[in-house]
Image (cartoon, rainbow, N blue to C red; front, side, top):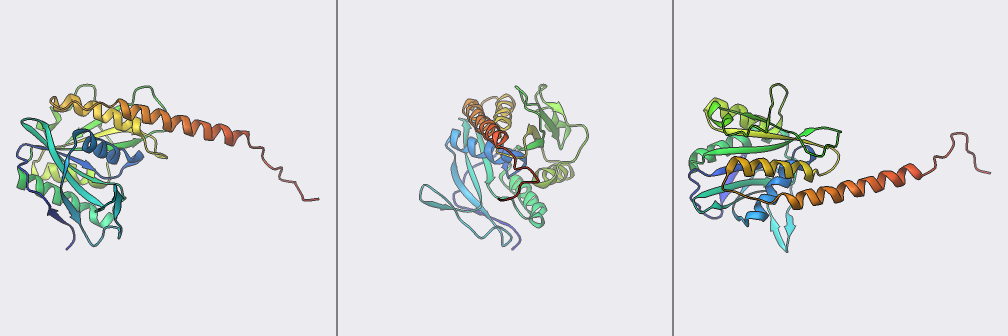
Length: 243
């Protein structure tokens, strides 16, 4: 076994949207995925397992959880979403098999589209985060809102990169949304911006991003206080000697 999906609950996912929530810069993907799961009250329908995964259990509310999980449910009465989510950095050897498995599962379920959020490294803090987009097919590119900047040149690594290249090869619709994110801490502001874009793209889904922006403010205020206190610490002179 390299990597396998174990379904815990059967669900009709024809024409569903699949969201990839594997860790990226600023943990943007994981934050978006977990926020969508909580906001839409999605049900766990499966797990992804592999001998390459970390030997651990994530415990929440007294419940042990697999490192990689699948949740699903309704966006609207006639539209469903499935979310792959993990909080852990996956080993490089598993990246291609995992992305291929997701695309195989997309075909099996006859899902419509894969959205893969990513963080794009930036050190600059803006009032409004820029989001870039790239798609595997011409059809998918037409679903990207005009406010999203075209990602014309660069490198996208990890599961997102493989989903795009494999999606192009198989003629499957995959859209990567890359939000400017700080690499040194969980960037809830970047995640909130991607949620806004998803609201525009999917139409029938309206997930309030405001709590993410409020969380971002708290994180940034805490970091500002830490930096302020650090700058007030007097440095010991290099020629200092004990008496």
